[in-house]
Image (cartoon, rainbow, N blue to C red; front, top):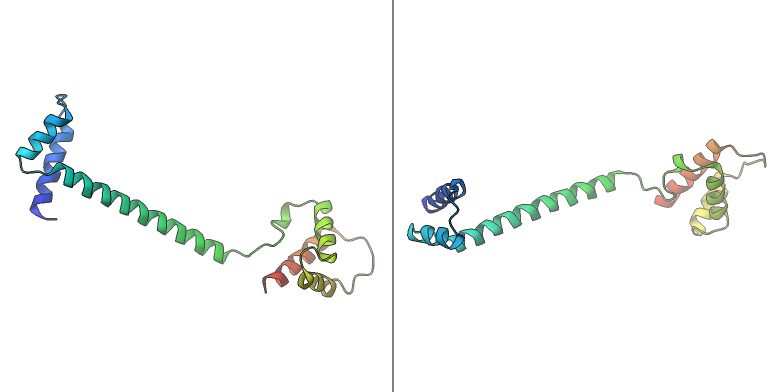
Length: 137
């Protein structure tokens, strides 16, 4: 940091510590008399703060993008929270082609050995997870 900015920081620190209720105009005038360009300092300070915040926001967005890319895509949402009725409705939608021909074919392939007995909630979840993975390919 150049000596000029060190002086500005020192004067700003002294100004912030001063509690004798002087007006802003008086303080600006005093800083000006001491060779400090308060407007330029505040402009630069605002720029540094803005850039710092932008940098932090960019880093946060990058972390969120990396987390989203690493997380498995779930076509049907979180299947562990769905009831059996919801799972059956989803599976029927897949078999009817509501999610596209590719997933309809994946459902047919996954369930080709189904003998017609009542499906358990666990089986439905497993089938839908497999079909969802086929949609990610």
